[in-house]
Length: 405
Image 1 (cartoon, rainbow, N blue to C red):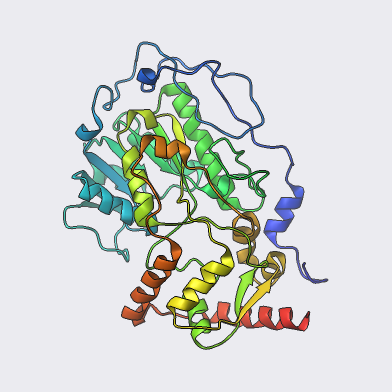
Image 2 (cartoon, helix red, strand yellow; image 1 turned 90 degrees about the horizontal axis):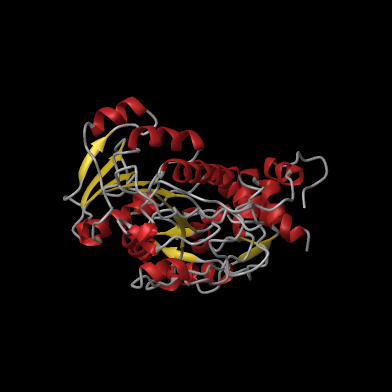
């Protein structure tokens, strides 16, 4: 709860003022034949139903817009542009694409932490400067454009101006945090409503999807939407404090865990994610569709923190459980990510993506992931950075929790 006299956090104000109406889903009156998924000329949409946004399927009809993927086998699709390419998720996807023999180009402004494979062509430009991006691209065309750095509808509209008509598939990285919170039922599927009144990031991702769905419906944009959940690698510590939490564990200091630690949380290693992602690139059956890509591994938060403690060599971690809204009262910036995501049990059904990419499965569970994280940081002491502000807040939260009994 929020203490008397403290200002109401923005996430809570928005949530209390948000309409309770669920998301809407547009569905077709009849399914399209599989062979027509790339034919954009005619679309039919039925009445809205209360289920959340789904990608409408193009109906069969004569194609009026040339799409490079039409008539091509997946093995033929080789040229891929990654916008980003060096983040937690995208770096693994780039590596997977290179391993599959794709011709990979990465567009970003440079200076990222994760190195790129030597086979990658690098285009340097600020993705928020459309003129600079256009100049960097020149006359290049790509079988696939994978957008990892679009977060608002304005970013999407800029991309449409840049890439519409010069790619066979535009892949947008949305977020599984866009699914309704709290979820009414588990597991979450692609038809779960898109509605998150607690987190602006998630609402912006939903708005991005809306723009792309309209472009697909109205102009035949060959779009695929991907919704990842919590995806990590050896450099991303999936806790409230990151390395600060590890330092506190090793020092025997209290570490804050939201709630009672028993909620289930799907956590996916980026190398596993990349298998599913790369399997959708250039796949005609992925056009006009949205996919959740998460692993099947959903431990409790207590297990997640426990595995990190084990990997850090701490046998008896001092874990202090605190209600999420109380944490948000002390650290308002954590409110949206907790109340709008991590405070809820989130388990996902991956049937849709595994139907197209049967090789996708969880191969790295978090007990192994935690060991990889600690091995990386122990080998890179220069990255063992303690956030002093967050550290002090955690001390106050722990003192509050223990004084409250």
